[in-house]
Structure formats: C-alpha cells, structure tokens
Length: 304
Image (cartoon, rainbow, N blue to C red; front, side, top):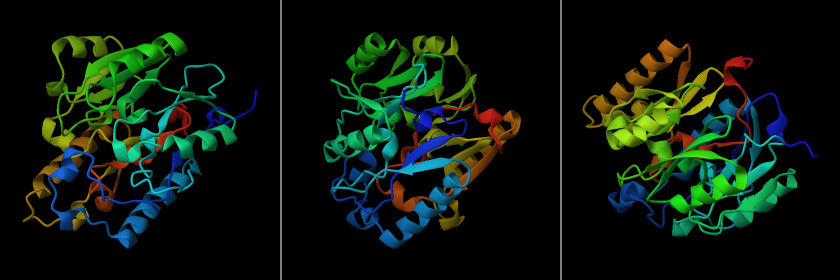
C-alpha cells in the first residue's frame, strides 16, 4: 500500500492559490444580490489575505497545493472538491465531487490526477454532491450529510452502500445556507456546532444520538461561525471586522459572532483565530471552503 498524507500523524490539507479566482458568474444568492461593483475582486488584496491564511495553516500542518489550472473561478474553494474517507482502514480513498454549480463543473479534471499522483484511489460520485461542504465527518464511519440544494440524497445512499458509511441525512432548506458547512461544524470528537433552528426535531434527534449539540444562532450562522476549520487546538474562522467601523450595519453582528466563538472555545479549551478573507466573501464563501482535509488526526493531541 502506497503511503499518502492521510497516514501522517499531523494534520494535512489541500489548498489552492487563488490565481483563477473570479466572480464573473454569480452562482449563489449572496452573489446574485450584490451590485457589480461589490462583486469585483481586488486580486492584490485576495493574494495577501490568502497568504495570511496559507502561511498560518502551513506553519501548523502539512499543506499540499492544488494546481491552479484552467479558468475555474472557484477552484480556490477546495473543500468542495471531494472528501477523503478516514473510516476506511488504508485511508487512501477520495470521492470526487459531482458539482451542481455550473461554474464548478469540470474541476474534477484538475483534482483527480492531482490526488492520484499522491497515491489516492479516486471515486466518481454518480449523483450531484459538492464535497466536504455537504458532508462532515464525525468519527468511526459516522458522517452528517446535507441534501436538497447542491447535493442529492441519492449520493449519500450510494456512499453508504459502496463505502459502508453511516450518514445522518438532513435537508438544507435555507437558500442562503445552501451547504451543510454553513450551519454545522464538528468542534470536537463529541461536540458539534449546529444552528438548530434550521432543522426538524427528528433530524436533531438523529444527530444527538451521535454527538452533543452546541446550539448557534441564525445570526451567527449567517455570519460564518460554522464555516470554521479546526487545526490542533485552534479554531480558524473568517472575520472582516478589521475593515468595519461601529457605524457599519454589520459591525454588531460580526462582533457578536466573534464573542460567541470565543466563549465556546474557552469552554472547550480551544483558541479561536480569525482571518480577514473579505475578498473571498464576494464569492459567497467563508474560511472552511478554502481547506480540504487529507486526514482527521486527533487534533487534541497535536503539538500545539
């Protein structure tokens, strides 16, 4: 068996330098509601913001960079590229996404040879499904999957049969929160941030059989609290508060989100770290979109 980054005892991720980043084709409601001047990306700022995040992540883990090939405007959002399957013993399996989003269709032509060159066996999903963004790993063979907007429930049924996965399937009903990672974030092995207001009692009961729920508000969810990434004992989250003044309409909501995450992290012995990725927010994206897991090592035992 060829070793891959998934066998490493340290966190490993995929990231992509935003050389092809563009907002030419609005592909979500956030972008559709922006004026043209608001959508325009400042490439210089985007590169600086990405490097701030990349250098921090690379300083605390191993980062593999996906080639910036083609004219894919959203290639930098690598979490949507697919999912590495940690519950399979050899950990060398990656399911490639089958995008609903038209501007993203074809990205697998970049991702598939990239992963295979590292020794992974790639699998094509026959149904619409958008990677880590709609499928979160908990532990063992247990996952939470979001369907209804960008991913089909049939994709999860196919995965369960083919890969012996236990997927808790929940419906995504808010058009602004169209991916699962917008409203659910596994914080620790046994605790998960969930915006409970968005799901049915039946769905929440199913989730609570496998993890303890930490409720987050709709306002904090809209401001990206669940779109976080865990790195050792740190929780990385996006915040553009450094660009806001107290007079800005989003200032108080952003401040409230920061306070909420700080309190949650304090209670769990974790440290929140915030990054300004305002240029990427013009794509309707948040921080977790920019990092794809190549393993899920026990972060509580990291060197941090």
